Length: 126
Image (cartoon, rainbow, N blue to C red; front, side, top):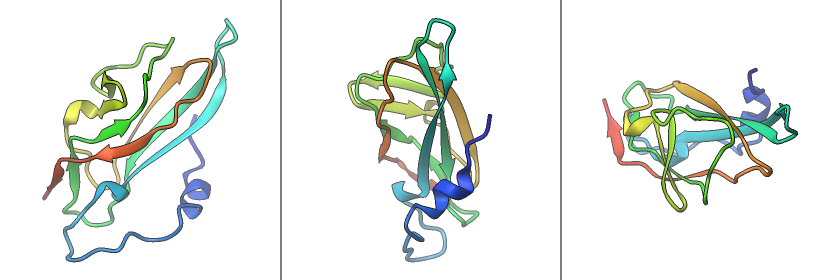
């Protein structure tokens, strides 16, 4: 199942202002999520997609941390993709870089949807 990124992306509100060609910021990391049905036991499931939307080839973003509350899931999530480190701190892709245009996705299941937002990035690499 794929999320309708083009629809969500148009609602983002515009481009990120940049100084210099190879700069990036946490605003370049977009998080989309949508309901994807229910498990056989009736627990709702959600698909999350995390995208490096930086248009420059020089903005691979590493150490992406997400505000995630007490994130947990009935469905197992590969910890190399998304892992809760502590309250309100989840790590994306085990801290490895997300290259420009790279997206990763996972599904989780819980009785409610977690609000997810980027809290920090370590920086950019070329």
